[in-house]
Length: 414
Image (cartoon, rainbow, N blue to C red; front, side):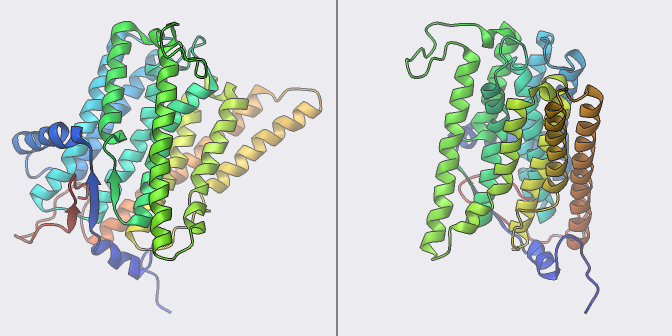
């Protein structure tokens, strides 16, 4: 029995990565007629050929990350409103990220540097940005302030980037193509975030919590605040989109004569994460109120590992194992936290703040460290398999363009 060359996949998986072809379709009219031409123009006029597509992707991720750091500096617990200019910067950061995210694939085609590493790198950065975007959205809409705090609204803000992202990746795993609908998160969703940020910059984030009697004041849906309208609109939109994607996969499985049980089981990791996050927000919300970055950062780290694992399984033509390692320490530490608090409650006393935060910091450090090391290992392994460097363009010597396919839309592989 030979020595295994790779940690994350076998030789068949490595060969699948070398032969990987991205197939995607973006049906967004906004992308087709505005965002894509803009990205193409910037690439052709401003980006040198020596710049690696992954460097463009990483540069784009820095903008929302800087915006998050600014929000955290002015309002560590997100309960006080930061200066107006921070919202304007967040609007710029979102648009810059969107534009650079559209540019990386175009630069890859331009420099003939398309490969599977770029696809994973791009997808991983998008997943990280989903976590950053969820936190920034809480600040933009003022949902952490006392006047707007409602578990439903916080859950809606967190679910808006996470739920459609995971389900779209899951659909790609089974269908073999990333299919974005006419209205989708990477195009219209980001632009809505830009608009929300501009409104907060002009009117203040407190505007989202003010009563407006004429705002969707329906008997069965009593929405009188703009923040509530955003929450309901986001929730309904993403649920309908995800139901369509789930239906596509189940219909395809039925047509191929395959069981629909396994695809549904593959949704369980995210369901477990969503359930844990919902329980945390609904019953242990002092953790979110006192340390929003720590709490949401933990949720985001688990989410990133889940979607990247699913994407890697798709690219290596391997079986996705939904019950993987990240959820185990997260689940055990969460159970320990809840059990300890319940035990203290039975004894007629509250869990001390010191013990609570010790457990929660340990929870965050374990999950974050594992996810970070996992992502670094993926980049290192793919670099070895493909014999490329993540931030340098390999000299192809006039070789034909990379094996990437775009169907009526964007090509994201690099």
